Amino acid sequence: MTSKVLVIGATGYIGKVFVEGSVKSGHATFAMVRESSLSDPVKAKLVESFKDLGVTILYGSLNEKESLVKAIKQVDVVISAVGRTQILDQVNIMEAIKEAGNVKRFLPSEFGNDVDRTLAIEPTLSEFIMKAQIRRAIEAAEIPYTYIVTGCFAGFFVPSLGQCHLRVTTPPTDRVSIYDSGDAKAIINTEEDIVAYTMKAVDDPRTLNKILYVHPPKNIVSQNDMVSLWERKIVKTLEKTYVSEEELLKSIQEAQPPMDFVMGLIHTVLVQGDLTSFTIDPSVGVEASELYPDVKYTSVDEFLNQFV
Image (cartoon, rainbow, N blue to C red; front, side, top):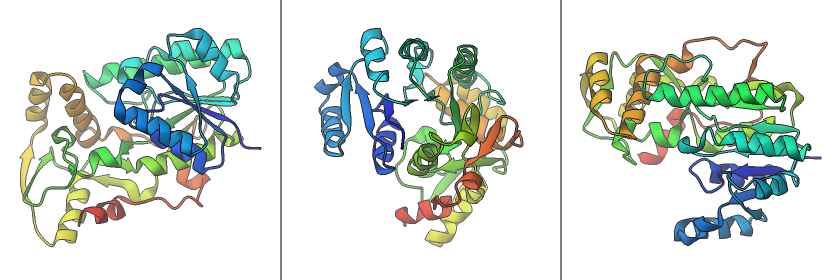
């Protein structure tokens, strides 16, 4: 029997991919949605598309304990995909899980760096500290968990070739900024692959109370690697401007939120090499592509083909 899955934060960037991926992997899927969000035409349309997939829509919010407990009582697995501003509000989910008493697995909102092993600086560090606080609270409450450490979202990092503060949707064909030497190795996965690996893990005893690292070998790439892959596809050499670490740090200090966070992420991932600065400790973590070799993941190289 596959578990019944509740996605909280279901209409968000990664939340909607989780809802669709949960259905695709054969789970009875429930999506918690704030009733007020239906006044947004885009979100209302998204909720209708969930219904078309057979998803059960449950109305509630993190601040309504009664609706939260009622929703959680209907499922086995809770996946939180709440956004940055609600990280600490996940204590409400944990309290509801404890009260409901039936949850086999909780996956808090992570989907990025390993927050217990980070080289991040402020303001990015503050978010990672909050995520680490949630981890400790889950462990103290003895709630069964899996933490999902995914590296970067391809949809966010690849179109800009790592210049994700530019928010571009297609890679540049003229020039690119390279941060520091451009050689620090990052890990970049498609949102759909992240979800596919996660859905394999929710019922797997090997991932219970562990970190699932999504580190498929073809997706461990540097910024220079990404740029070279793109240059080969368009048969053109981009003009490169090298941004020193000192210059990037100055830009982070001068930037306004949320751009300071995004630029801090560039520093963490593409300068510090935060995602590849450690080896996986088998006592606390497992690697997704080794556990689930049947998942045919999309490489960064393949992901770039759509833009040619």
